[in-house]
Length: 287
Ligand SMILES: Cc1cc2nc3c(=O)[nH]c(=O)nc-3n(C[C@H](O)[C@H](O)[C@H](O)COP(=O)(O)OP(=O)(O)OC[C@H]3O[C@@H](n4cnc5c(N)ncnc54)[C@H](O)[C@@H]3O)c2cc1C
Image 1 (cartoon, rainbow, N blue to C red):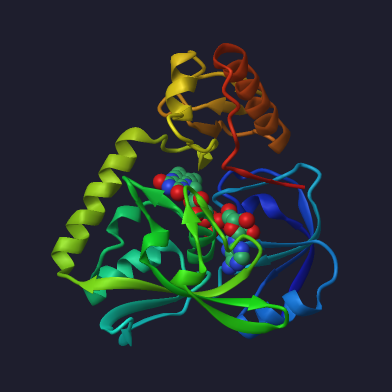
Image 2: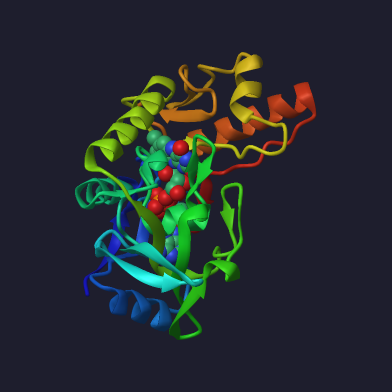
């Protein structure tokens, strides 16, 4: 196990900013992941693909465990709830991009809607990532978690999912099983391409970002409100409200985490002043 000190964490997040982590480790397998969690005392942050995480410029005075090397995947049929189910088993660090390639090759359908979400499996399930009216939580059959010193399986009826939220927030996820369906390679690839095109036509390209910054809530679509208030292009240092999608903040090249945090505050203040709505961050700010 290699633990690095004073590690520049910005490279590990999609926003490409933030300070240094006192300790950083890319665990090689699930056993190592569990042992580190078990024996580390002090601040701990599990990093999946870092696409919803913003570390402060002051860094993180603790241990960051990256799951990026936990990439095992397989599929099989299993009898569950009195029916034969086709299950895709993924270690928590599997990137969605790799999962989509695997699904196309093995002709496993159902998860195409999340093509283009740059998540790891662990991060996606914790956040109940979703797109185009569908959510990853709907496909979870069971999850393996490390809790109180041992690995446990939580079945779907023991987990709750809601908009960009799950009851798994305080767990360490090691593996997830998704229910998939037999399909055809060309059908899967075509669906994935369709969703990717929709995404590319509406989301900023070429700038570091972390997707939608604010959560939707009943009747509140933050991007629409921010757009209506004319805040596209609003800046704080190197951080800017995307000209293409008002729900995104982009790093125009030299943004600091403080620039992004200040811009978030500015947007929230303006939105509250004009509409009385309190926007809530979907982005995870870590310090
Ligand atoms: C261009 C772009 C487009 C996006 N589009 C979408 C979209 O359409 N829909 C959507 O929902 N999101 C979208 N996102 C946001 C992001 O990809 C999702 O929120 C995703 O679920 C985050 O996964 P991650 O692995 O990167 O999480 P991270 O940022 O690494 O972590 C997120 C949270 O999960 C925790 N975590 C990660 N792995 C584990 C684990 N194994 N055990 C315990 N805790 C863990 C972290 O501690 C943190 O609390 C987008 C982001 C970008 C940059």
